[in-house]
Image (cartoon, rainbow, N blue to C red; front, side, top):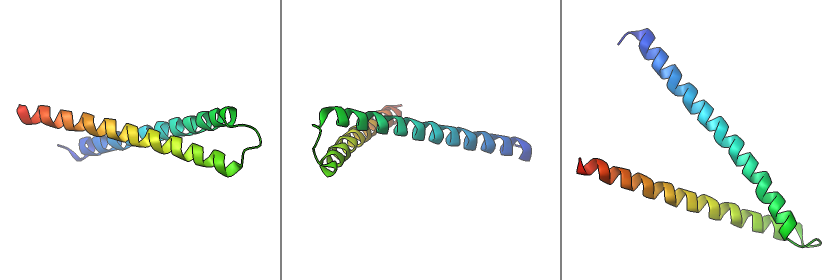
Length: 85
């Protein structure tokens, strides 16, 4: 493979990673705002700010653990499929 082709391939891979990370950050920020707005609606007015932040942290942690678990299971299933081939 020529150096130019190798460079182009690595450049493209890096650009895809950067774009994916950028969109991931944007999605995370959007969810951050949505969850915070939801908590403000649900938690009664006058409740401590600390309590609201703890609810927020719990919700975000639960979502992160659930998604990580699901993605891990999906990866295990794909690896099992590859082993059978």
